[in-house]
Image 1 (cartoon, helix red, strand yellow):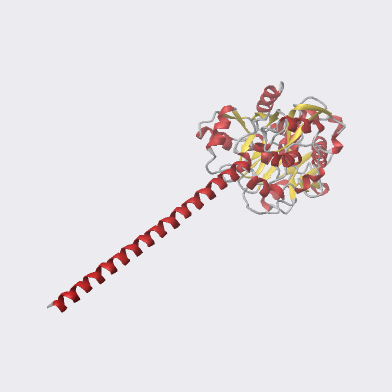
Image 2 (cartoon, rainbow, N blue to C red; image 1 turned 180 degrees about the horizontal axis):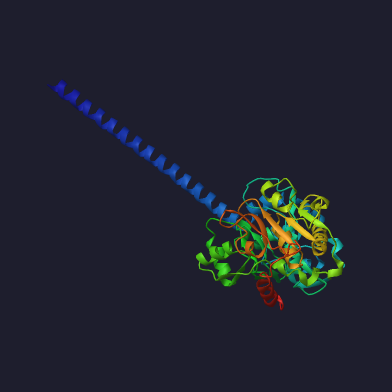
Length: 414
């Protein structure tokens, strides 16, 4: 009996010991797990704080890195001496790491622009064709000189001999130069660099086209409301903005006012016929009509293009090319083109012009009605709409004048 009790006591002691060992082990495991979790949370918290600080200090870094390759040929451009003093005054407002980038990329002049007198309160668009849609791309290899023809139209309203700041149309958000006035006439795609206009720019939205078909950023809509009413180059843009609650109207295109600086006297006209980015054979259904115009010898026509090489031209060369084309259009007997910015300038310069559109173009609603046209209309049907006089000569409608005159009135005191 004693032996049995003794064994029982031993078993009880062993059970107590096992229980104590188990409890201590459990406590150790629990303590060790808690320490690991606390450390992990601390590391994650520190990492998050560092990430937030990094983003705040480098808020433009991702975009600037992405654009670095796009703007590589800006290295041949220089800033004005005034920009250095301006930046020195802005160091508290601009991150010092961005100053060199800002100086070289976002406001500048070219060396051979010295023949113009500097005036520090105007800007004019230039184009580097960063479209914001591709994460990595080498960019476009050629450009559309029609963009610079639009810029020449805006330049007419600046003081004569004014040297405006060149501002990239696709980076208006990142202009950090002195305060300037800027006519916002152009084709625009609203993406990261264009979500709003820089506070250094006082814009006037006229002859404005938005390419986006999808939702526009609310930030940009609020900006547009601030500068409304918005003059829209086409009725599609007008209707789109009205849908967002922005006051907007159809203004037509500013190139319809190019007669201010580029019109010629009637005795300066030639017998030249220009095909601009079109040639016989491109669109047989249109060719049939064109060849029926017996008053014109189309076999002696001259081919022109609005394409130009991006990598081998600077901005001044592009402006000069645009001017040379306008001088040709002003003196021509007839212009036949697929380019809206060959057609509308010809209209302004009183040169008979035919626009050929092989497919429906969302830029045309409103503008289509002002021109002689062959091709697909806004109802997506083939149509020939040409004014021809008794001698078989093409002539333009004057319907554009009511819009062109209003544009001149709006900008005469710009």
